[in-house]
Image (tube, rainbow over the protein chains, first blue to last red):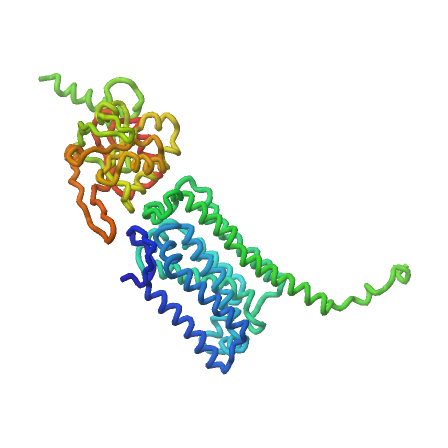
Length: 278
Length: 205
């Protein structure tokens, strides 16, 4: 039995397949959250519970049958859906699910505190995310890793960790936060640049880049390996960027709303009428 | 007796010349250097068989493919893995190559599952890849004879739940104009490899 989705080369069937490793991973993630929240004596709000459900379901959908299985060994487009779910949907949802008090306690923790504070530095988040995105789209890396369950697990974990590192600098609460709102917006904009490279290669390459997907048993006879790859490239840029631009918009409108409520103090010189100056 | 060394030198020069200037006229010596597909030693002679096309017409393989680079593949349309990938990759490669290569290559698919692969089924399946691909069928003995001539084993039937699979050789034989297959393409050959090799096969073969 397979415990994690990987490329097997076996013909695809639409009959459900169990991946116990994925269930265990999702269960452990849920237990970790529950334990952390209860240890802090917190009761998550309905909003936080909803975000947690969104995050956990995203992880589960990305890794389990059918999306995880199709992405691991059959279709590059589904591999990109896994990437989007693990890097852009699950991490911000799970960060939003953690009550502020729990995060503050984690920041004071002797082990997690320094990690979380350092990870909130924008160059750490952006550098790590870009490196992960670029490395995990190199054809030889994917063709090697996806053949093994452990390799596929590492790629999936890299995307999840990369997603957390990407979102943490813009979503961490004040004690850890190191950048102001305009910087956050600039950071999010910069985060959309590195994925352009693999996305462009996927979309415009003359040949299928990954042997894993080119030589995989076909799922949809009318979808060629190259078309599948082009869909992957377009999904990566057009859909993968949406959560980032959504985050950009949230920061911008919150900033604008606060400016409206509490306008910045006006310099006394600006109060003088032209007549007085003249 | 003295003629022998002279002939040897002449033959060597001919090989060198043909590899440097493959389009030159005169007798061709196939030089498989630089091909991605593994070479076969000794080369497989082009089989001599007659099967039926999807139109129901007889197809004399040797006669109909004479003068062409011919890719011969034995498979079946219900094949869940190797056959559609091979056909799709050859079709994609040909689509990237110009008319010079396309006009010099014939792709022949022979079914190893004549019970299910009726001419209409084969035609519909091949049309998904390239309508120019030639589909052949016939009685089991005739197909078995064609397989034997190409040194391939007999197909095996593997029963699954509600269907059956046919075990067959997973490679494509590439016959050049000398009526020999010097090179074979196992499963795993990619589109870029096909583009590279088809150009060479047409040029050299």
